Amino acid sequence: MKELGSPKKLIAFILFIIVSASLILHFYFPTPPKNIVIATGGEGGAYYALGLEIQRQLADVGIKVEVKKTKGSIENLALLNDPTSGVDIAIVQSGISNAKKMPKLESLTGLFYEPVWVAYQPKSFPKGLPESIAEMKSKKIGIAQEGSGTRRISDQIFELNGVSTKESNFFAGDPQTLFEKLMANEIDAAIFVYKAEAPFIQSVFRDKDIKFLSFGDAYGYVQAMPSLAVITIPRGVLDIPTDTPEKEIRVISPVAELVINDKFHPALTSLIMREINATLNDPTIVATEKTFPNINHLSFKVNNDSADFIKNGPSVVDQYLPFWVAVWFDRLIRVLLPLAAIFLPLYKFLPEAYEYFEKQKKANIYIDLRRLERELSQNGDRDHILTHLNLIENKVIQSNFEAEEIFDMRSHIDLVREKLTRHLYTA
Image 1: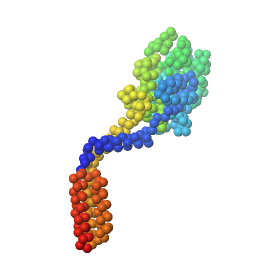
Image 2: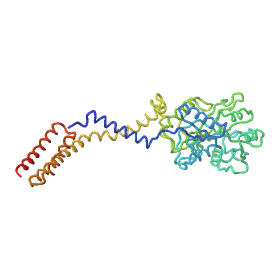
Image 3: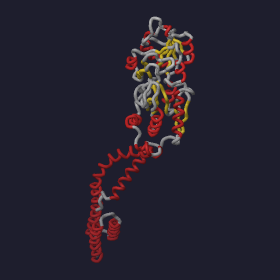
């Protein structure tokens, strides 16, 4: 009998695994889409600018990115959570929502800090400069308009201090209006949420009369709002000519993060992480080199592939193969390994199964021969017996039995045929 472990059988087994893997890839890991939509923010903002950069980078590998202008993080999350919106990925401010409210969303990575800058007029605090929000809550405070991520975090901060932003001492407006009112002493303080490099907040830093709150209770906010980080800002780092800040301060900060929905193709994750890693590695005013990308202080469950990228960096396949080749190879490996784990132990038992079925085939042939012999001894129809005897012989000849086994079987068939011939002559 042929050995199941022969090279031909082994090759056939490997091909079987590859075909099985290919079918799984086709149905469960389809080819990445060549068109995606990213929700960002207003044109001219940091989110929109990053969306354009992602668009440029992914165009190099043949993926078209539509950068969708929106009103900001809250709208972005609503679009991403809506399966009919067409949005695949969004840039949002951490802490706007969470996995309990939107379980179908996942965080890919943090992108940069967006500190909460509480700017105030020192003359509004004649008894001493404030060190906490609690010391400011009775003052006239400018906050962002409803529907923005900045307003959401402002509401949360004041709520933790037992104050509602719906009180009469709060004034809602756009950032420029708030800044102008602050300079004109029409309000005592204003809350802005911007990355430190943003042109608007840079103009606020340069105003000599405005100071920035150092959150003495910063870690208390982080305990209550895990999506916030605490950042220490050294003296003068925001604006050297105005010595801003004039002493080291602490600020609390959400993180701008990339969020995807459950329909996002996993192959695009490694590509986007690779491009983001190349874009965001440089130091910033409030972050050292290689602070980002990271998976700290994010809103949702962290995507497994992005977490693996942050921990181990790009795979060898991603580093040396073109994107579309790497995608197929990586997905194939991910399927082949579990398939091999399943089928290799099974392969050890296949020889015994193969041998059992081969023995059954031979046994059935001998059973048929014995049946024909009984019919012959009972004077059965000779033509019927001869026809079936020839059928059995053809089955043996066409089988894949060993040559010696075929010879033995045909010898036994000939014995029955001789008995049939003798019966014909004596009949």
